[in-house]
Amino acid sequence: MNVNGCHYRTIWLKEPGTIQIINQQVLPFKFEILDLHTLEDICKAIKDMNVRGAGLIGAAAAYGMYLAALKAGENSFFDDMLRAMEALKKTRPTASNLMYSVQRMFKALSCAESPAHNRERAGKEAQAIADEDAEHCRRIGEHGLEIIKKISEKKGGKTVNILTHCNAGWLAFVDYGSALSPVYAAFDRGIDLHIWVDETRPRNQGAALTAWELSQHGVNYDLISDNVGGHLMQQGLVDMVITGADRVTRQGDAANKIGTYLKALAAKENNIPFYVALPSSTFDFTMSCGIKEIPIEERDSDEVRFVTGKTSCGKIETVLICPETATARNWGFDVTPARFITALITERGFCGASEQEIRALHEK
Image (cartoon, rainbow, N blue to C red; front, side, top):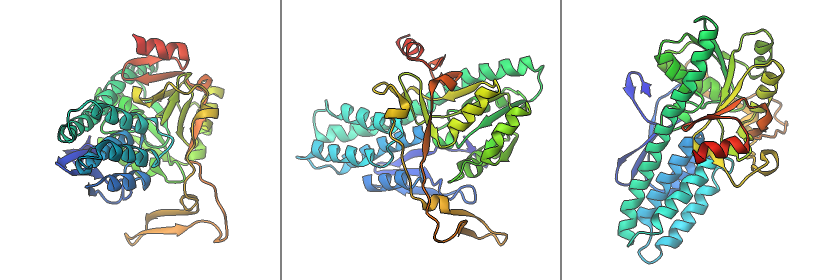
């Protein structure tokens, strides 16, 4: 996608041994590129959320395996790669794409002839994972566009109001995004759109990232507090809800940023379609019941107790928003049961959130 008129991906290979990323920790106030040279750099970037979002975490993990391969010992190559895989798995437990990527990378390296061949293969496979993520998100946009077009036609070309939660745009993937890919595709086709952007506490990815993305692309939006969505739905000001996902079970239960479940409940109550957009790498076919089986990451409580923003003097500061003695809990995700999801939008097309329809889509 474009940043100030220049095309960027969220992660790319600058040169052998150097991966570059857009530092999402400092957006929207600063646009910064970081260089990553080691597995440890990648793990820290994922854990500290310099990179975040399901697809981008997966691509970063693949590049982490590549960097680990460059430094792995001649006689301990596979042991070193196993340790790299375990280190990456521990960074963010909820997103399925991370596990998909590291397992795919390890499998690709298991049939190579030598460590030297493995290192070359690692670079190619990591690049392939990143390229596929971008292409799959582009296809998600094309399939989701059809849904938005139908709503627009039903409204006689009047503005289509879409509510989204957190950031599932190009910043969350290598390019295009999942939930926002249909938005960009519809906007580029001239469909009149307006996006309701949840701020998405506690890290405010909606306010900091989604709002910034939409501004860069020229899409009309309004930033709202997280608790406004239900009111907007009651007042007929939302035509559809679309979110991303970090893991979806074979039965269609979807884990996404905390607060997504509440949006799905409100949408169901108000007869508003609720869509989840995801590449197939986000499916976890080993899991059935999302509520019981998907691991939910609990992050540092300071993300709830403090917020970071820009002062009137232009200084970036972090401030405490509660009593100094206050304790806090910080779950990063919740699970939306399949029964609240109108359809899943993937690079293969869309389907109902049920095991039968998900399997049929993949078998086809």
